[in-house]
Image (cartoon, rainbow, N blue to C red; front, side, top):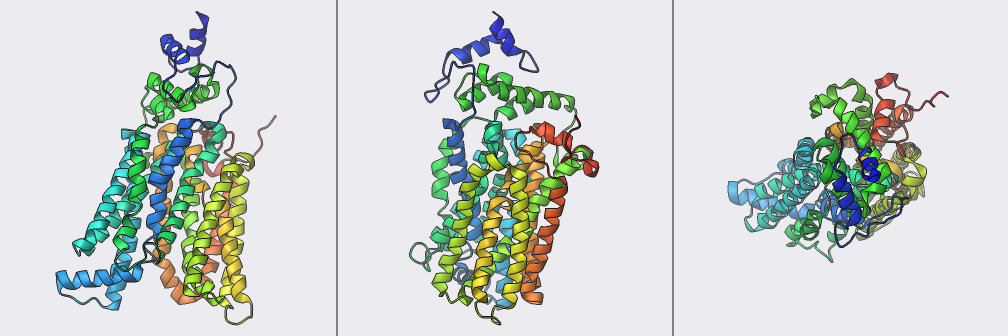
Length: 524
């Protein structure tokens, strides 16, 4: 009779001993084989792997795909836009107005991303992490349907609306999916699981570049199918996401549905809850912290006003915005010019750009192994500093591209080195770091702020880079380098190592704002 009582003592509130007995004596589904061992080592369970694969292909990949796919058929789609406006409005679009219209088609995706980031916090708490993830897939498919219909209807409005819808889905994805995956993973695998979402985005960018080749869907009349092709994977992944477990942390801490949370945790880990001592202790710890702050409604505004979360919020948002203000999109813009200057043909430069995307994917795969071993802080700081140096080298080499022999090859090396440095920290870590720094109750709002900062940084660079580029040319990369170095200084001063620490410990380290000393060693 003592065994059920010992198990119940693990929780903030008493839990039915019968629940533990039932869970420890019978499997929850055909994929589980519950172990009788008293020792448990965190590992990749069936449902954890399934969650990573399904959300990567069905949620994250479409985000990257929709970022990159619009670039290759730009001239073809602009001809369609011109014809649509003439037919519906009897107006010939001038070059300047075409630039405005095309900017709208491209930028409306970012507007949707910002809106999705803001909505992500409330949806994740009201619907739950899994149902909110399912909602992002449904919205994504709606965008694909609009893309397929815009040519038949000869409607530029449907094209713009489709871009807005997929942007909304992308914003929801970057706000919800990293949090969902982080809450599913045991602490030992949190870093590896955190890389899954950004890796999906990188794969999506690469797939979008490849699908736009002439030999695949780069033909004159193929662009609606090119824009909508991602929906095939989304539709395949929807039923898989439907059977995934809900986040046990969300159920236990936010909804206070303890029995359901324990059943989902047992199904997720494929072991009896009686031996999940580390997971259960973390649930109890976060539930106790949430109980103390139960009177607070953790909206985005409330998180912004909370002094003890200020440093954590600034670290998250500066990291997310800095990912974009490091100039990754500007580097890809200039890459075609650089590769052609090195003597590559138009098609050769396109393949070289695809090679940059492949580097991003490969580094993301390596990060799955590196993060649990090396930690977040050294990888992030090394990545930011290396990226700042590469950007400065790129500015100088572009400036003297035609003046010195061999400089085009220096430019190419700088581009590849930058993409490599970016992929080893600045690319993947900002996506999931908020899930390791915010406790469960304010986590959805913190993730939403981080996602919003990322999309806002993307919008800022997209709007200002063409103007700055025309004004100062290659020296625009000096600005990116300086901003990235400033990010390095701030993160070096205040960003603590999160590996092996709970969000409660991190929030306590940073609770005094700029007076915090999160890097100081505790006194003995």
